[in-house]
Length: 286
Image (cartoon, rainbow, N blue to C red; front, side, top):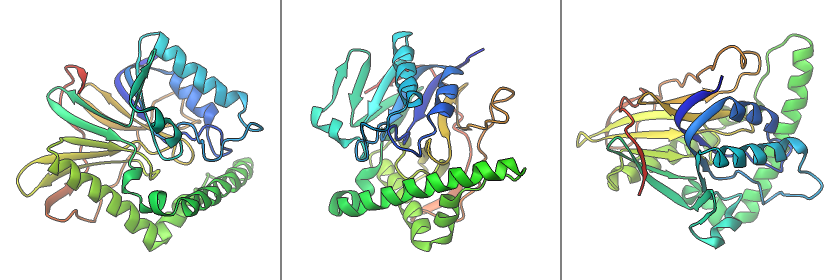
């Protein structure tokens, strides 16, 4: 039986690359029935798109998304840096799919600001060749990681994430993620938004921050379907992170436990991870 959800946010699927977990994503999409689905950038990887590699599993994801739209799910496609070619078309509606660069919407009186997040990444804008080179290296690491994890499963060992270990072990990567989140939170507060929703950095997260002036800003990141296999879900008045677990997929819908962050955003009083407790009255795009 499909789970009924108010809103689902997916990002960084990277269809057309070897690292994409299209089969797992297709399973997830078949298990849900959201009123609104937000595809928050890098759904197709136009940077590395090759005619020789777009397997049927990737096409099944496309068909499933279109079927969901036909069956009544409101579908927004927000552009990212790997599918930035679509930004040339501006903001428009293509039948059942609404193409946007960003999305501002109301959920029970709270204003949400959704966009991919590459606007904060200087390498994408100033050194595109370097960003592409880094992307190729990341994709290669994911492919090697997947092969080794297949062997580990044969011998009864749990899978490991090389990319996660690299990010945790490199101070620059950790600082980049922290700076990205802090910047999104500060700008959202300046714009008087209650929630900011991003993708881009492949780091699933929920942080609820109380600013010095007493205003609360919630930062959400939907993660990716290359490494973490995560999605943001809104139902029963709460935001939560969903993580695909193949071993438990048919039994339970596991939730990703996000540890409390130690770092602070400048001019904050409290940094904690708690669910958004608002009730959902309606999804109203502004």
